[in-house]
Length: 329
Length: 65
Length: 173
Image (tube, rainbow over all chains, first blue to last red):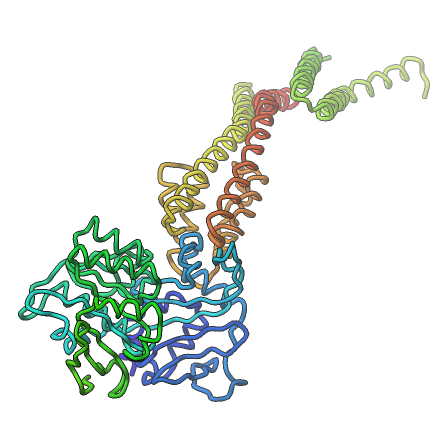
């Protein structure tokens, strides 16, 4: 049991470093069973401290015990939120100006902390946070080899096919694309690694901390961290001569234009979009325009019929043929 | 009578005047005033015995007791 | 007689050194203010232009300097790296305590830095820049004040020490 706690202490050290002593103590004294499956730590000022694990939430008592009663839970104080902000920013909020504006901070190790609170607007964009009162610390998991089942569908000989991954939120889309990046970049049995460019607008794929990827994204991977997709794709094409460009969550008209540019430059594109399936995607104007152009050679749909990260369907995007009919995981 | 005391008083006088100048130059008039006073007091302490002697002598010469 | 002369000479020498020391304080205070200004300028560059994390920014910016403030800043940086259970403000106040009665640091610059620490790191770049500017301006004023004080008193203390020594010697002779 002690070993397991030490494991957490070492593996999630950046997360533990970001918590003030009192909350750290509470988290570390949770039973190992919950601790090992920890998905999120939710800290909201004036409300109970919560963790997500095993797909549900638990209130935490002062002594680290689990409670189902809101009244006996530890209530997060203003001092706590102030301290957390100080600790996650390394006492240097000025260094995270851009990140704060986009609502999250990436810690060393690729952990992401989502933020919410009172915002200050400038024009129609968020200029800064006035008070930050909610933190969502996500314990991201790198699932190495998550993409093994998928890779055969997106590779033809030594070429990577243009691929669109459709998935509802929380279905392991980012985990999948991260592992695809790693495998394409490192190469694997029967495939030599290629140059991969990642446009990581929300620092989710590589989890960069000061420009250095904290997740294993492969040896031939260049990352544009925090760069808008449309701009980033064009930058990569011009300067880094990638064979494959990988981005997360396209959805803006600009993105579509940039994707077309990449196709014209002979670069393979792998990208994702929020959607529950092909029919659902056809209802969204931007996705529809993209699909109608028959750009993507492979369309993968994720779901959870066999658990998170199930590959439900694979379409050939050019002729619409179904390549995989039964879900696999 | 000791002639030394006269030199001593003279030295104190010179010292106090120099101190006075230095302090005045530095713009500390009140300190200068204080040093002057201190000088006067110090000299008085030195000569108080002699003055006492003087008065005693005067009294004994004119048989005033 | 010889003993008397020697002991009187000792008194005079001691008082002279005391005076020199007092006058040296004024010079050293100005030196410290200048160093402090340079450190803050470096720190500002690190923070505004390079977005370095505070502890590293401090270490980088005090590297070329000497003196009391360097010790102070290094102490702050070390406490920050330790990541112990203190906020920056607590660390700042704790480390400043060591400088409170330092003879080479005037009360005004102590207070400027005290207030400056309350805002350091906690806001975005634009306001950080403002705080830096404010501290620099106040330090500039203090430097001028210290300069004037030095002109007036540094010479005075130097001669005062010697004269006081002679005075004591004469009275005791």
